[in-house]
Every structure is written in structure tokens, then in C-alpha cells.
Length: 260
Image 1: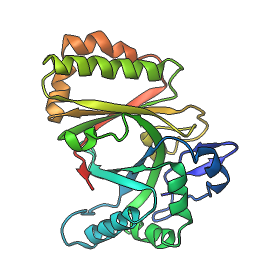
Image 2: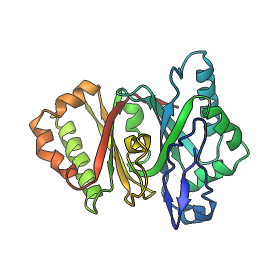
Image 3: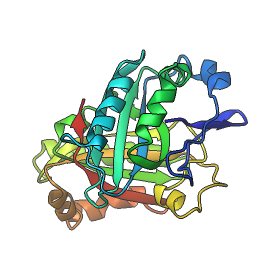
Image 4: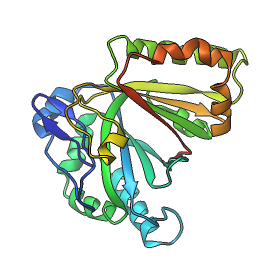
């Protein structure tokens, strides 16, 4: 999975309009800039081909297992989580923790990367990805909670990251006080790249032209139903304003992640 670069900063890799193909552009000329950065989590939205099964003995499952093995063999790899959206079974979310963006670049330069692209192309129609620097890192909530509320906010203003921190802190305090039913905790972070757009916009062919970053939250719940019930509470209504009106838009869905 390959982000491409433009000018002096990373821009996110976008879904290719051609099945089984990747948009590639080396990041090596920028790798030195991020070599000493904090560890990152790569977020990849993978659009699956119809009928693909990722577990069992099918060809798709074997290709997916080979994909994971290749990633695990790379220098700088720490861990990964994957799962299919509960709202959209054709959307596979792959989250990879790396020592830094430079480790991802090293993987892209490795001879194993060509066969990796070919294998992944057997199960997917395209991919859209970017990296974030989560707080806390690693985002252990991904393996601790049965269901993750994945929320991404696009082109937020300068106050938004602080607002997200405040929102997560409020939820954590109320979780410890026993005021939120089924909430496990959360992690959040801002994208390394600029020009990040909604996955839905990529699918609709409307991506491009954006200059803002994204802020992503991983909020853990006992179930999707527990999250939806929380949205009806006074606590939610009192605090959700922190995340509204100060960004271009959001995407929210739920994923049951498997840890590898």
C-alpha cells in the first residue's frame, strides 16, 4: 500500500480507478524528514472485491494470510489490526503500527513489495490510506474493546485536535466514574499527510483539491448498540459540540478488529 507524495509533504494514497492497480510514487525523497518522528499507525481503507472471504480455506483467505505475513516480516513493523466495517462488508480496515513513516518507505523499497502488491490485488479493488500519530501509542484499545467506533474528521481547524483530546478525556473520566455503559476507552491522532479526504468521496470520484489533515478517533465499546445508546444520553449532547462545526465533515462506522 503506497502513499504518494506531492511538493514538500505527504499526501494520502487514493483509490485507483482500475481494479488490481496501485497509484505509486516513491516517498524516499521525504523519508529523511520523518525518520525521527514518533511511531505511526497506517490506516488503510481496502475496498474488497465482491464475494471475498478473508478467513477459512478460500483463495481470498490464503491471499490475505500471505499479505499479513509479508507485512509482519518487515523491519519497523510492530503490530496490525484488521476488520470489516459492520456497516459495509466490502470495506476492510487495516491498521498497521510502524516505528515511523520511514519504516513504511523501507518496505516499499524492498523486493518483496512487488509480489505483495500482486497478492493483495487478488482480493481488492482499490485502497485509500494515510498515517496518524496516535495518543496513546500504541492504540491498545483496538485489541481491548469488542467493537471500535472509527471516527474520522476532515480538514479540522486549529482547535480541533485539542477538542478531541478534551472529548476523549471527558469520556475517560466518566468511564472511570461508571457513568458510561459499555465504553472501554479511546485513542486519537492527527494525520501526517495533508490533503486527506473522505473515503466516500474517493469512491464517488470527488477526491482531490483538499489541503487539510484528518483527525481520527478509535473509541472502544462493548457493542455497536452500546455506542448508539450513548448517543441518546445527556452526556453525549453536552459534549459533542466539541467535535462539530470546526471541520469539513466526518465519517463514523464500527469495526470488530482482530489483532495480529
